Length: 468
Image (cartoon, rainbow, N blue to C red; front, side, top):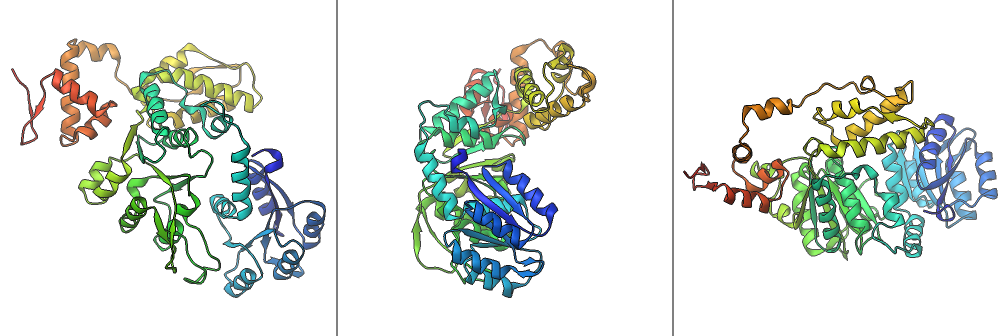
């Protein structure tokens, strides 16, 4: 958001450490915020600033937070108010909601909780839509796209360029669901953002949800919303993720870990594009696209009956697999160079160089944490370096890959080695072609062509037959 369009927040709480931490979080995000630790100070801020959202503790020294709420809503009726409290006094919370509070959060809460609460306010949605309408996007990599996408997908390998090409292709079909697979740290959410912000849905919400992080008791409410009074604690009507993402994109991370009892309801909503809030009977039509991601072998989850096959078919219209960093070592150098430049600038350590020995060392490392691990390495190295040259000592990793010379000496028959790799990959996944292709880092069609090339066939017993 531009400076003029940022939501302006007042944090009114008597705990100074709390207001400072929350203020710091807002300053690093797309909000403007100011803090106050007394009721008098808070009222002075309201008189001298245009405030869109008040985050109010109901217990302040010498004054009842409900009295402040009543006064604020009387003087500034359009202002949104989120009540926070470290106490489980539900009577106070109910009174606050009746006086016009928008939402309630109990301390301690996570930053993501306050972020979600803010994004549900009408003020946020209005500003979000207005900003999207104002911004001009005259190129594929637009200003919004550059801001939203982490540049960790810098790379020169054919594999990562193919991933980009697939993402752009997917963006041209904004109604088709996409499944993104790859190990943890490869950047699945970044690819999801590329697809969204390059598509016709870019003017609307991109909402990322960790499918495994929502408690069973809140599953339906979070996805489908609820009607005021439908259960204890439902103080207001609330939109669920499907409604919030109307005309936009719902990104379901860790989809393979989604509770089984929710999967059937997700399937129906995805097929019909109609949801019903908890406690209501009125159907709500919503147009959303689902992009999902997993670092698991989702076919294996289906086989073990932990994931519905029909839901997988619905989500897997288009499939993008992101290879692990160890499978594209040529990307290590440009990625590390970028990250070092990034942190050198951030930490005011200009002119830092990387010795050639560092690149040689990292080429022998397997990177179980993938690009995320490389980025963390770069940050730590820049922080701890005592000179302007990063040496091997700044990267405490142990070589894990086999020596290429030793590996080649075992067999110099390239055709035989490729055949052996395909054979091993098929055997490891019980001869599932898609899973084998994912393990090899190639498309299923490419695997089929290679099998045809080497005359590899699957018999009815799923055993590899090697023609003479």
